[in-house]
Length: 256
Image (cartoon, rainbow, N blue to C red):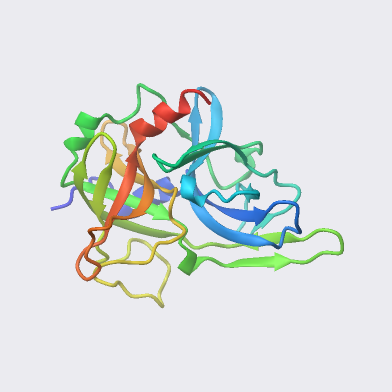
């Protein structure tokens, strides 16, 4: 039996405040040269704002855009500064980028993370069997268009989010595994798509978070960074997803 004291719909909306998608654009080209998109999380650590995603989403010789101005359509152009890659770790599959924009003018806000607030390994093990949440922007729901100008192009992107709730099944120092077998959608406005009963193609959600509802803080707490499918997952009856734990993220942030 999954445990979710707060309404799942409310929890997902609160998670969305910290989650965004980003566009990968080839460097030294017109902005229309899109290489792809993925998800990530805005975090605040030691009074600095960072954008966290997966290392495998970073493509050499590229620019990365996110955090566009408020509105249904996200227009990414020269007025939106690109993210700057600070460092990445392929083993952890984490990348840290700096954000030079003004988050107060966007639809996002940073999730405050520090050494005292981080959920520990022991505390996470006590959550085994309880509900974890994912929320991100998969490719199958993306809608990215190019607006061609005389001198400059811009990207207009309206990516629908996908969310799910699943059971935390394995936890160790370096990895968290959850089962997000798709029995139903959670607050997804995708009427043309039906639950699979098992696995869903969530390419594009790498870099988003694994969250748990914390009764002590009355808020969703970040538990890990979504990496992708577990190789042992049976697509007909389960959807095992791997996450880098949040304590590994904090260790990686220390020198930033």
